[in-house]
Amino acid sequence: MSLFSNKDSDAPKSQAELLFEAQKRKERLFRTNVAITWGILLFFLVYLFSGPIDVDTQFIRDNMLFIAGGLGETIRISILSIIFATLLALFAALGRLSTIPPIYALSTFYVSLIRGTPLYLQIMFFFLALPQVGIRLPGLWAGVIALGLNYGAYMSEIFRAGLASVGKGQREAAMALGMTPTQTLKRIILPQALRFAIPPTGNEFIAMTKDSALVSATGFVHELMWRSVKVGRAQFHNLEALIMAAIFYWVMTIILSYLQNILETRLAKGDR
Amino acid sequence: MVPIVKISNLDKYFGHLHVLKNITLEIPQRQVVCLIGRSGSGKSTLLRCINFLEEPSHGSIEVDGVKVEGGEKGAQHRQLVHDVRLKTGMVFQEFNLFPHMSVLENVIEGPVIVKGMDRKKAIELAEQNLDSVGLLFKKDEYPMRLSGGQKQRVAIARALTMEPRVMLFDEPTSALDPELIGEVMNVMKKIAKEGMTMVVVTHEMGFAKDVADRVLVMAEGELIEDAKPADLFSNPKDPRTKALIDRYRNDDN
Ligand SMILES: Nc1ncnc2c1ncn2[C@@H]1O[C@H](COP(=O)(O)OP(=O)(O)O)[C@@H](O)[C@H]1O
Ligand SMILES: [Mg+2]
Image (tube, rainbow over all chains, first blue to last red; front, top):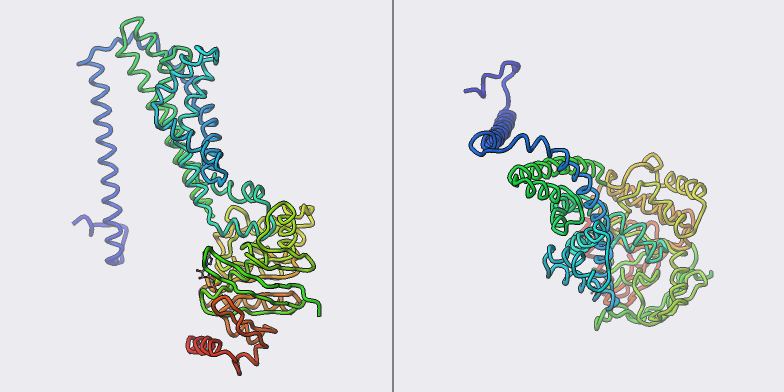
C-alpha cells in the first residue's frame, strides 16, 4: 500500500524503480532497527549500573582523571609496537620469499616460534626472564619489543599477501626497463604491496591497543589497564575501575575503527 | 646491412622441455620482423631471450655490439644483460603499466631511475613520446582509468623513452577488444616508419602483410620459415606454415 502513496511523483514508476525503492526502504528499516536495538542494549547496561548493581559514583569521579591518564601511554605503546611490528613483518615476508636458505629459515623460524607461544608468556619473558641474564630493558621498551615481535609474526602473513598481490608482469616490466632487483623492489613491488597492506595493518593496530593491556601485568607501564587495576584494588572498587577502563578501550576502538573506515574508503577511491 | 640483433645457436630448456632448438638469426637495423606460429611454439620465449627475461640455456645473443653468452652467471654477465636491456624496449601483452604511478611517472621511471637522466629532461622526452602516441592529454591520469588501447600506447611510450635500439612486442594487441586494436597498430606502424628495428610476435596477419619486412614462422621451437611477407603468404614452403595461414584466413571470415 505505502509503495503507491509516493506524493512527489506524478508519472507512474517502472517496475525496476519500484523494486529499487522497496529495497532501499528495507535497508533503511533494517538500519533503524539495529540502531534502536543498540540504544536499548546500551540503556540497559547503563541502567544496570545505575540501579540494580551498586556503583560508587564518587569513586568514579575521583579516579576518572587518573585512569584516563593511561590513555596516552596505551596509545604510545601501541603506536611504537605497530611500527616495530610492521618492520619485522615486512622483513619476515621478504625472507619468506628469499631463495637463500638461511634467510628463509630465519624468517620461518621466527614466525613459528612466536606463533607457537602465548603473547602473555612473551611479554613476561622480556620483563621477568631477561633480567636474570642481566638484560634489563626499560618497561616501555620491553613491552614494545614483546608486542612488536608478536604482532610482526602474525602480520608477516599480511605482507606476504601484499607482495603476492603484485603480479609477475610488474617485475618483468621493471626488469625490461633495466631496473636492478633492488630498484624493482623499492620502486615497483613495495609501494604496491604496502598499499595493499594498509587496511589490514589498521585492523592489527586496533587489536594491539587492546592487547597492550597485557603489558600492565608487569607493573612497569602505567597504561589504562594498570591504572584501573591499581586504584580498583587499593580501594576495593574493582568493578567501577574495570568498567571505566572498558569504556575507555571501547570508545577508543570505536574511534579507531571509524578512522580506519575513512582511510579504507579513501584508498578504495584512489584505487588505480 | 649490419645486424643489430644476432642470435647464435640458441637453445632454451624449461626442465626437460626443449623449447628453443638451435635458433640462429640475424636482424638488420630498421627491419620490422613479425614472428608467427601456433601457441606454444616458443615465440614468447625467443623474444624474451633477446632481453634475458628468460636466460638462454646455450648460445649467444648480441644486441648492438653487446654479446652475451647464455647460461652464465656472475657480476660480469649481469652487467652485460643490463647493457642489453638498455638497448631493448619491450611491450607486453598485458601492458604491465605500474598502477601506482601516473602515466607520466610510468614513462619517466626508466630514464630517471635506470639511466639517471635529469628529471626535467626525462619529462621533456616523455611528453614528446606521449604526444607521438596521442596520449599527452592523459599524462596525469592513472593507468586504471585508461582503456586497454590507451594503456598499451602508454606502454609503448614508456619503452620508447628509454631510447632503445630494438623494440620487442609480445602479442601487443591480443588482450585488447577488437575495436581497440587499430589504434595500437597505428602507433606501431608509425614507429616502424620512423625506422625503429622491431620484432613483433603477433596474430595480426594484416600487420604482418602491410608493415613487416620479414616474417618468421616458428613451430615446436624451430624457425621453419623466414621470408618476405608477400612470398610467405602467397607461397608458403612448409606445410605447417600453410596450415597456419589457412587457419588465420578462416578466422578472418
Ligand atoms: N616459465 C616456463 N616454465 C616452463 N615451461 C614454459 C615456461 N614458459 C613457457 N613454457 C613452455 O614453453 C613452450 C613455449 O612457450 P611460449 O614461448 O610461451 O610459446 P608461444 O609464445 O609461442 O605461445 C610451451 O610449451 C610452454 O608451455
Ligand atoms: Mg606467447
